[in-house]
Image (cartoon, rainbow, N blue to C red; front, top):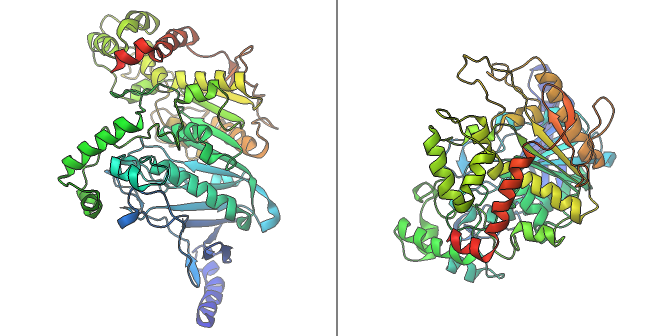
Length: 520
């Protein structure tokens, strides 16, 4: 230990003169000492374990507490991302349950609010090490930014009868959500050492991360672990369905278990023990295959979330929720009007004609009006429903937004008529705007600054309002006001509300006995 102290002392003297970041003072967490770096006044810690490696016998089990360690653990590099089909910047591994912290605190007594980032990726991909997710810009606004990893794909969400039998609640799947909960529990126990306030934690995420935020808002297992929620292009208020579509992604546990049996056959083994021995890179994996999405298990996700919210059975915290104007452009939009009409008829049955009128297609093109059906079925309707349900059943405030920041493309441009695609908002939230983006405009920097101010104000006060930004009105059912990010921040009406009401009829019918039978 004396030798280590001498080396550390030498490094702290030499590093400032070499252009390399300084090492931080070691910080005590429950498991031992961790040491990160100090960069431009921020203390940054990367790759802190918040759970044991979910490998071997712990594959497809709830996360377990991390082991303690002797000495000082270096927390200066991102840990590998969860195993997946892609190639994240930090690599990938089953040993993936780590978190990262950006803290502007000078002492443990600073008691700063905490923003906890949950990445997207369709629950099949994702990583905390993506450059766009680094937290220095948000942290510089007076909050602690934490990003947590979670298992994805079949390693994160596979259900199986044997897996259910070996778990005390007799359920399986949803390990990725349990990872998020374990990360939030670690934050409650340890964030004060980094200058954070465990009583002022806000979770936020985009796409699958935003959907996960809404699931945590509805999960009794997450109660008390956070005090505000921000969902970007998220929400999970659709009914369960065996043949899933965006916005109707959830299955019930018994059906998911049967699919787990099919998955085992696909892997070429007969027992769970054999399945656990297959190397991760040899497992059948991929988006759209069984076992790659959260399920209604009666434990982590107790029921259809729409029903839970109607009953007021959820974690009542302020929410800030919204989506992008042209999400439908990012999810394989139909190429011809007939493709669009055929797809709407297949998915929506007797509601197809009304929805085609509400979301009209062109004679020879599939314009934004048609693409918006995919946008609203996956994101817009869920956000609108979430806002209305919480406004009806809770005293916790609702803030609703619509992100539509893009240039007006000329009529001869192949992008004429396009809005803001899925995921464009993320760079604005983290203050990492791509200067070479074809969507750049002269107001991007101002919009990004406003969004970062709103998000961090919300973390501080449960309310996005404050000095230097336009007033953001709360959403109520009597006065459904929405913040538009559209070259400037301004209040407006719910976008496509008439069309949303047509879509609402479909989702309401889907919960009837007739609708349930039809969906089978």
